[in-house]
Image: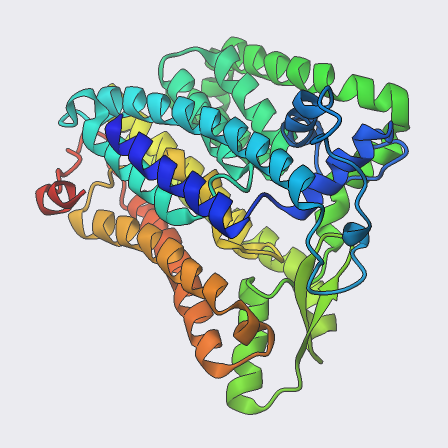
Length: 450
């Protein structure tokens, strides 16, 4: 607990001193709410309902205090870059309130990480070492207090933990919440379905479905109920179109500068002289890359995502089938589910048009409890997580050079994205080689350094 308090205090002090508060887009939504402009109608938003709840809850807490409550700010019209600083008092108050919300979520996540590790990492008594790993990676991320991606990771871990405890309704409800924050965690339900079916294997898949249909139905009902509770008010007030627009907004966004696609364009610009430039997207305050490859990328993103997801799902299905040859320990089963969940989330992120380092927070809570069966793969996995965060900090520090497509800044972006790929490849190889009943290796050198 002392390590958590010390590192989080440093984050808070650094945020206040540098005024590195949360995403200005969040404050813009908060300002609209303060004058009665509600999300979805009349304000079009880019996030699902639970995400908007997380964004607006700090604003609601500040509304009774007129001197510091959020207000619409002319600086956030979004037509120029860099964005002029909003009102320092109001924006600062909202940013600190948002950070307090994330700290509460962070403390809950740490508790959940330690609880899950104590049960599913046999040699980590009390989850102490896994908790320290989470604290360190959360600290290095640098975005813990400014973004809400950790909420996705926390509820995904809750889902994995509940599933391993045979609490199907809670597991599927947790993924429903994750889906209502970011959308793409919906893919995790495929993993949960595979887990339920695998418990009836090596029977044929159809027979397995017959044996496990009650558990699957309970999960589906729980998921649908949670989604209905959160989306029904939006549909009643704003209609299906506003909700649908929020869910599909990111499918039409530009190619952001940190994505793998933009990285390829930047390398081609540097090495082969491909014409390229960066632009500013006022709708979401993001930096995008433009080049003659834009048309190709627009068509390729969907194909790449589909191919990558199908490939990963096929490998995961193979892992479940191979693991079903003999009944293993509960910790081994939970490790298989956690590894599969992290792999499917990373597959989507890598194929997406945006890949900021803070996306790792959506995987981190599940990622730190993963113990792969091969020591070398475990080391690659953990070192890749550190690589994404450390090189991610360098990318942020060299942001203006990257926007200018300076070669040295492109090198650091490439190293960061190679770390993303390294983490993903480690999981895929581990799933391909997975054997139930095989002991999960304890990595003494790695653990002792945490």
